[in-house]
Image 1 (cartoon, rainbow, N blue to C red):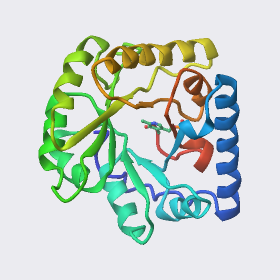
Image 2 (image 1 turned 30 degrees about the horizontal axis):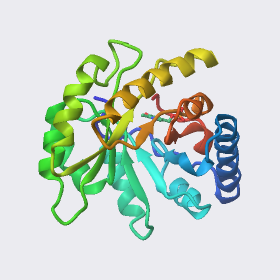
Image 3 (image 1 turned 90 degrees about the vertical axis):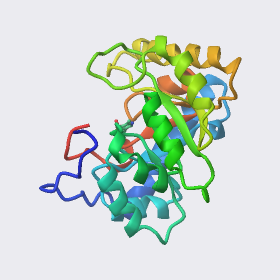
Image 4 (image 1 turned 45 degrees about the horizontal axis):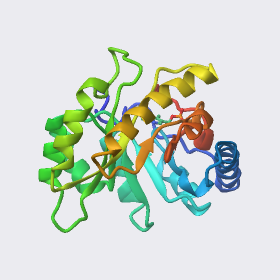
Length: 246
Ligand SMILES: *Cc1c(COP(=O)(O)O)cnc(C)c1O
């Protein structure tokens, strides 16, 4: 359901125009720089992934014009339409949504990164379907750190075995982990969830060359950066409120 076609009754929103895209991008980069400074980290160690779901190609183009290169999408059909409309731009596309096994081929063919691998079957299919002419697909394993039953992501218990198996797949390059914790406005609770991912990450790094923690969104990117995020995935703070739910 989550990975189904873009809801046809809703046109992708136009999003902010060029001037406002620059201002929003500067605002988010300022937040990243301030959080990195507080964490004693180089701001360049945190990559900004602009999550463009629910916004159309014009909004992506405006942000690209302001200097943004990496874009994240959750829904395959919606993403493919945008990629076709923006084929003249050199953009990096990251798939961050739930993955149905019958949708892995176009994901393997059209994205450079996938953040939402949460089971071996999906990883095996992405690896087998990655075109030989392309570099291995960069992947993160999504981990359910909050233990919410309704949510996707591998359980922390299942992670070591999954990491072992995914790291061996030739079409993939395992980069690290991604998480979407239960939403909370409590800063310490935000940090505690991200710290959980960092501890899992640090433990697995003894055996694997991992370099990516994809964590933090518009409402909690500061907490994520303090806990070591290397990619923050930001939608609302760059594009405005979405017209369909997350
Ligand atoms: C929508 C989405 C985001 C962006 O969320 P915002 O709160 O709008 O910044 C980040 N990551 C994932 C996986 C998402 O689905």
